[in-house]
Image 1 (cartoon, rainbow, N blue to C red):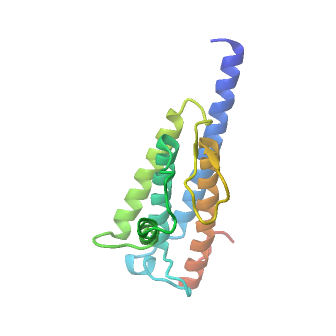
Image 2: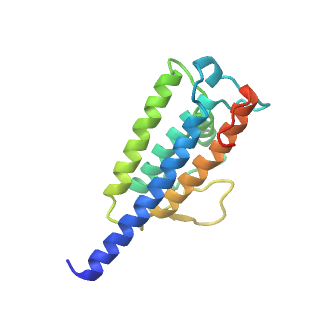
Length: 181
């Protein structure tokens, strides 16, 4: 292996590991908001929204898996945002924010742990972070938008961090507990 190849690989590995490390930190912050709570507390909305701590964990689990699937296979680009199918997809997306059927706090936390491991394993298996696919049409996108694996990782950090903020508010309203401070 040439020095240039080794240097490029080292840079890629460092970039990949840095992104995964920041994502893991954000996951830890999110999970910290559930520390010491029972199932009832973790599934209680404390603001005018229906968001709950357990629901947020379930949602970010779903999001991680969806984005890893996107990196691997892309999306269906023939989406009609006015169709009943799109409305059904949006309804399914809304279900990712709440526990349904036989889901429990314990099962959601275990699934989040599995999804985190799956994400880390998959990202480490990628030859590079350049793999790119077009995002499916959506009302909030203009034109053709392409995201690389790198952009997806950055988005996962952003999304998880955003939901950490939501979780902080929910937890503080529940019992005054703060993640930091």
